[in-house]
Length: 243
Picture 1 (cartoon, one colour):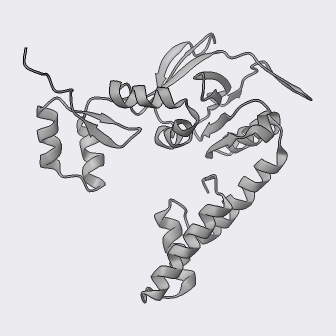
Picture 2 (cartoon, one colour):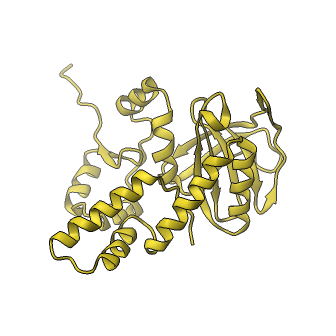
Picture 3 (cartoon, one colour):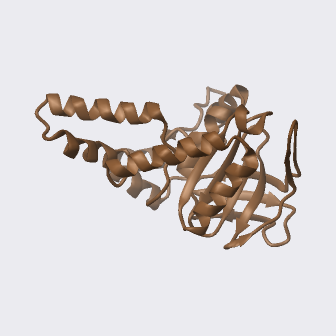
């Protein structure tokens, strides 16, 4: 089963959702718990409880190195997971550690957009990370960016270098990374459309599946609109005033 970071607040919200359905005549409480769990991306309610237990275990480990080892173990099992560390873990700033389920794992600095590769094509890597009492040292290997459906890196790493990688949980990464980045950067992305990508047939197919109208998307493409994955919205070019 895929590991999904799960907080107590999220579990309580799902329970309340199931209770509302039951009050409206939705059926047995156990069946409704399974239903709301699947709606939220879990396989069933037991999957929710397992993810909560594992999330709490990561939080209790405290050290960044322990979180990294946890993510590497998940990657060895072929599981994709994302863990955001707080000040109790890093002691200096938030970090993001994630596995992909396809042989790669990474450590990210959401503020400075820096990256270290922890595992590459199934092989554990050895970035310089010293998590000592009262001191954390990380020799970042380069930078990263989320470009549409791709995870783009530019590293001083002989096996990786500069490349755009497909198949990572990019949408889930955006949900974790956006709250951590500086407000001025978010504003720049909104007005500068920095994360926008061309609306390809694949994007149209996915958006239509989510409930968008195909004819509206076609009209937007004709007007030069682009799609922002971070905000799940279509962005139109700035209006030009009369010359």
